[in-house]
Image (cartoon, rainbow, N blue to C red; front, side, top):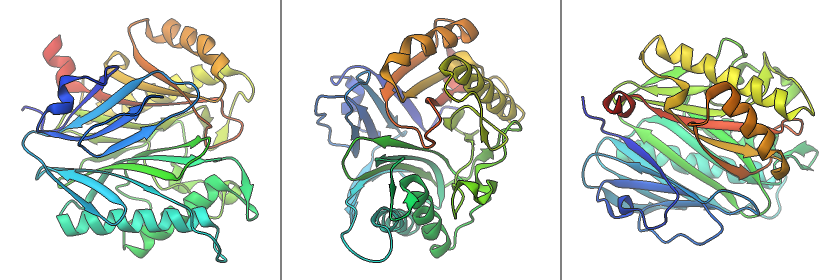
Length: 328
């Protein structure tokens, strides 16, 4: 069956797919401003590979705006982006307020347009590891996110989307999301405790996401930001090579779990984004990836802070199993 959802990674701002009428949205990692008509989330840091991640449906799209959200949908999938400033004042931490507002808006839009299934979220947060209002900002984000889930009557342990949350130097809370009409399968990692079951050592509310989300009908595996965590604990603190190896082991575990439902996905099919805390670690990380998975892995690098201060890298990935089979 032909995929009804496609993704493309490109290093060119002139990619012909930007003019495709089925284009749903774009994530741009570039120091140069990107100009596209589709919903755009642009992340600009002091160091990153210039790259575009394009999400395309099967037919013509409808565009719109709702509150802070810019969106497009095609009858099967909805893609949206929003940037929301943290409010001034109030007894609730501003980031928590902004996060709850953002997610409430997203869930309201999903319901009004008839896309009830959240598939993938990308979250970018200024100063993610800083402590303000007595709580680390990533934990403030988790509070706001889960409050929105609960207020919207959504589950906080079942059927959760894939997601990432990374730290940027400055700017508003920036979120991109992908939703659909047909449920897929959330995938967990047997080497790790599910994030939604983390103990309160990691904050008053647990992170609300699955390790990956499988879309069998599209042949896509959407893998959340993955790091050097076993059980619920960070391992190999301070050792970037060991953290890279552990991260790859976790990615392999997720792929193996997904293959129980949709066989044929391999590491070589992944398009990876590698978030690194320290730009000088790129060479060591690349060497470990190539040693374990080979030199042909598609990977772009972005300088970002990871959600835990002791994590040196995080890798998110997408696998298009149908495209890989057609190419073989």
